[in-house]
Image 1 (cartoon, rainbow, N blue to C red):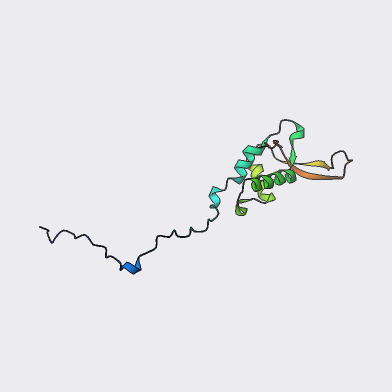
Image 2: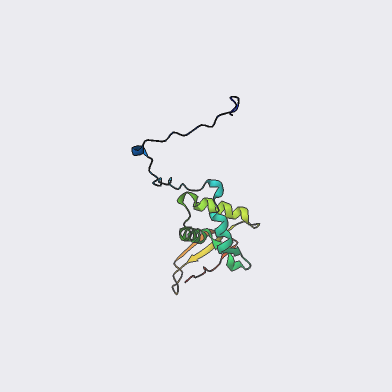
Length: 135
C-alpha cells in the first residue's frame, strides 16, 4: 500500500512518436579569452627567455626585450588581450629586479657595418637566452 503522506514520484510523459527530440550535439559556445587574473604571459616569458645579467654587457634595451616578448607570445598563441604593451612590460621588469633600469648609450648597426644610430635607451639588467630550436 502507498501512504498518501509520502511524496509521489512524478512520471515523465512520453512525447508522441513524431515529436521526438533529436540527439544532435549542440554547438559549443565560442571560446572566450581567459580572465585577466590568469594572464601568465609575462611570467612564463620572463622565466623561459631571460636571466640576470652578470656582466655589464648583459644589460638589454627595452626595445629588444619587447620584440622578443612579442615573438614569444606569437609562438605560444597568447590571446591578444593578454599581450602587454611596452610600458606595461617595462613596469613589470622594474618590479621583478632588485636593480633599477638605466639609460645607456646604444649603438644600432647591421652586422659588419659601422655604427648606424646612436641613442640613449632604457636598459634592464636582463640577458636574453638563446631560443631553443625544436625540429
